[in-house]
Image 1 (tube, one colour):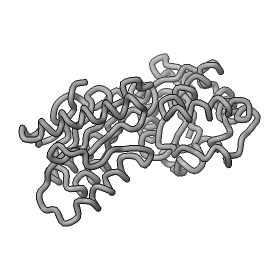
Image 2 (image 1 turned 90 degrees about the horizontal axis):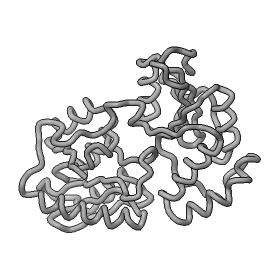
Image 3 (image 1 turned 135 degrees about the horizontal axis):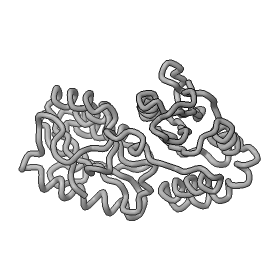
Length: 283
């Protein structure tokens, strides 16, 4: 659970607002290695209780914004990172605390403009309360995808056209705040990522390509042009590799230096075992 006050290289105590997935666990592990003090607030309905991994010291619902802020303030956190998957809530049915009631009109108005506007609004609310919001990659240096191939397989020359097409499609989607990923096969956008996320998009592709025997095409993931890079960067993990393989793809290309890589060693091992490439492309 919460780390005792420690040197941590002089870094301020870190508040981790934890959603689902492994990213919050990686942040806790990094704080422990760095002997950095931290406090974790788990979001009910998103984070899974994992006490052995430090998830969580306290819990709050998505609408309990005042509780989240109060817990972090009482714990002495000066810096905050928001990490993990959180599904967009049904704003008409979430339970709000007093702070939630005060800020919900701003949040709903931002949400109507898209996910990027919603995230920027949440960052602003935390900053107004005196917290410094930081990115997960600022806590764990090795989280960012490097440029070039990760494992044994590089991008085949035959797929350079698909990569260029994927970049074109994802950048166009990003400009209208739709999604961060697309699947391209022989120049055709087979699927684009929207609210369902990458894993479900890949599952749809697996259904579409059922019975195909030749592995081809790729998944492309890029941040949006206007991305608030402290939150919601594109993310790749072992499940992404497995989903791409199940969809019959040849590999994954994502923005180098702007994509979070969850468990680098496991991603490389699984990609190599499945014969997929994972490459970081300059953007």
